[in-house]
Length: 198
Image 1 (tube, rainbow, N blue to C red):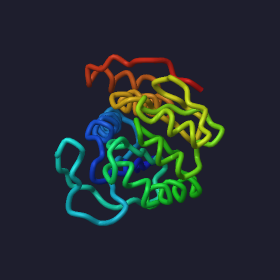
Image 2 (image 1 turned 180 degrees about the vertical axis):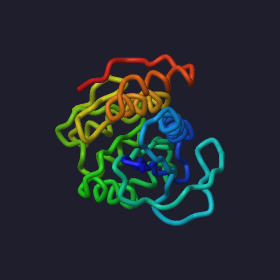
Image 3 (image 1 turned 90 degrees about the vertical axis):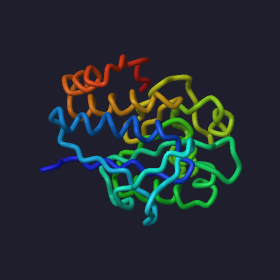
């Protein structure tokens, strides 16, 4: 029986590694004994998503009511693309807010933090994002810190692209124990970076 459902919401223009890095960590954690089921999901049904570097992948369903929601970034600096487009049409922030209100723990990778900010989840909180979005995130009244991972309880944020791997490893450690997290890091030959802020 699965105790924790994790969903990573993807959209056209999403950064591949922002989404796939945490997905692989969580899938490896399940194989190592963590009671977690992870899915790549979209807000609406679609056959495939085209990511920022033209990788196409098939989502595994639509967003439900996960215990853990991860929001990747990608395309913040380009008009009408990626996470910027997803934020500006309000669909993604509304979905993030609905999940949070229903009790989901919400995390972001890179510029995915802008979706959390637009949902009103980062006001007055410490938060991290990719350097290209720091000024925009500060404009949403977030307390931007230069950290790789920020854990503010039910809202977590991660800095640049590869920090999504460390975010997911931290979530595995926090929820399922250090031994599983270290086993996954070893399996992936990944040296964890940075202290967790918070």
